[in-house]
Length: 73
Image (cartoon, rainbow, N blue to C red):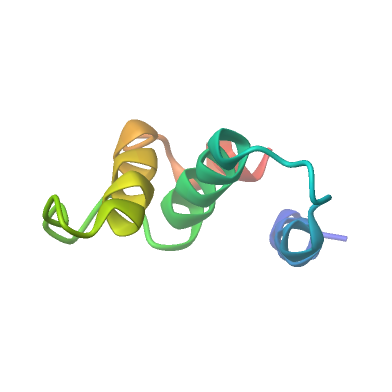
């Protein structure tokens, strides 16, 4: 199995995380997923009235600059 297939397998497994998974852990996974699949942040930071999307954007921005290849390892 190649790196991309392995990544896709784990990305699918992440959709069924245990109920006790913290929001912080979910945000870390989200940021890494977005960096690996999209690359650097390519949108404006959401406004203060959209807190959920703002937290997700911040998580993505926190891992910006990492290469996609590095994130597959």
